[in-house]
Image (cartoon, rainbow, N blue to C red; front, side, top):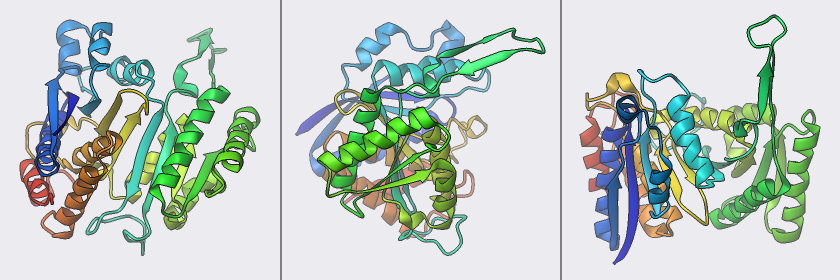
Length: 354
């Protein structure tokens, strides 16, 4: 029996509730596929910060590096100023563990409503690969004359060739492994961001021409991409993009796949420790009511299995979510309108594992 050590970080708000259901499904899959998941709990989040003043101490990072993956519920507390937990926990983890890929599947499941007219599951099934450690998020820049009429602020879009190359190469590999339309679309804004954009365009073409001749290359400006994701999402197979643009278009992707309740993401270091989470946040107003949708957390658990190399078990999670939604028992993805409780949805998906 294969065994993996997983750091469990339920976090804030409804995070513990959705992670509990994710663990339930993962354990069901583990029993079917001979996989043992050893979970270790970590209480990092708003409550701990208010109690101790700690976000994520360096000693914790050393511990987390010993695990095979991190399974995160949500970070964000209404009584903690925005930015403290996000920077002190989420960004610190991404940078310290060099999780340089943000992986965001955009997939419409059956019986899930999309705001796109006349589009169904056969039209919405693509993946966004967002570079996750560079760009404006490095925090380089500054401000002067703050609070005066002449205040100036800068924040730098920073990219080195090695950072771009490793992201683009991961995207080509993923496109080849996915083996659907075998098309990799670079999304940027090279007509205006002429230096950084040109770097991305050249790397995309050079690596594709030399190493991935079986993969079709495509390019969209980011503003055009937002139009095509709405008009013709079936055009896309895999998108690779920079950090800022990826942050924006993946939220659009979440909406066209039915909302944050089904959107899962992975912060991936292919050579190290990766972290998987539902995208929707902590949703504090629903805390403790057993009404929040756990499907995004369950899907994130499936992504974790895939990244750990357990492809069959990961496919079983995806199929269980598909079958649970196809059954019609889940009436909506919105909190409080599912027609089932959080716990019941987790039970349903776990029962569908084959």
